[in-house]
Image (cartoon, rainbow, N blue to C red; front, side):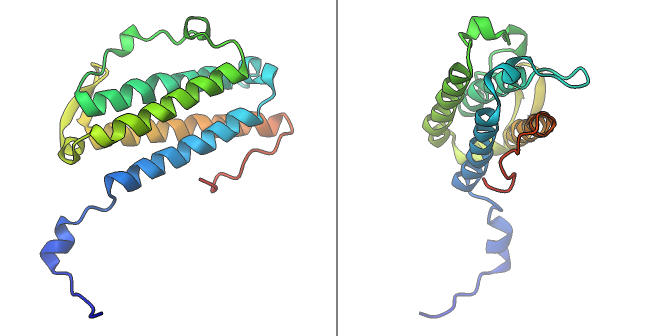
Length: 172
């Protein structure tokens, strides 16, 4: 097999990541966040707080509320409005750690199901996510991931303060 030379033009046109690689990156973060949820004792997941921060379950509910409608918005342009969100656990039917994990898994499956329907050029389109945030689709997705990392970091602080070793952050 002969080495093929890639032209400068081909290099400039090549994406840094493919859509499949970006999905794998996002789902890697989601898998790690799921392991953080699993590491929490039931009571502390819903009640423990430091310095006025929300309990971790409420942060996770926010991530659920962004990712599920977010992947739908990326695919279809139908974002709904963040003003319509009800972050209450009760309305979402979340009463236990298992309920929270089940909701997390539902969204993970939705992401896998909807992702392939997103046209490649859609990631460069500017849209108004949730009726409020005007960005290219790829920038909204990067925000979803950044927000998850931020809240997972808060979960790590909670776990360590409870004397629980969190999952290694590099194992995605």
